[in-house]
Length: 160
Image (cartoon, rainbow, N blue to C red):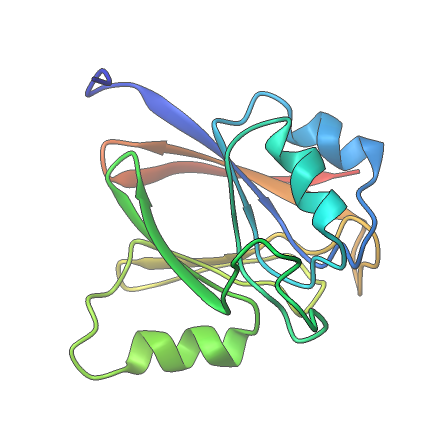
């Protein structure tokens, strides 16, 4: 049983394309859970992240197989009473959020753009951690969020 006032540190990473820099691991150390938002590139990336914390991962457009890990293109989970939807491409995330009858999550996570993003539309916070390996229009990066009592307390972009 968890304390109702306990916070959870959630690490976000995307677009590793088979490479996991030591600086990314260092930035995600101490997280309680990690989400990889696709374009993983190698099962070894997931195994290295799992050495840090439990991992939820989705497949990206460059992931031609599920690496024997049973991954899919979308994931839904709840951590610290925060509902989370993960898809690699922003378009797929948008389609999932716009589906009839869908219950909107508090947090929507995507990758694909290799560019960090944080945007709130109504009650949904949409984020992209960028890429720790192949950034576009930004420095290499990951994100760490603090979740508490059904809300996102903070979002930290960590340039590595």
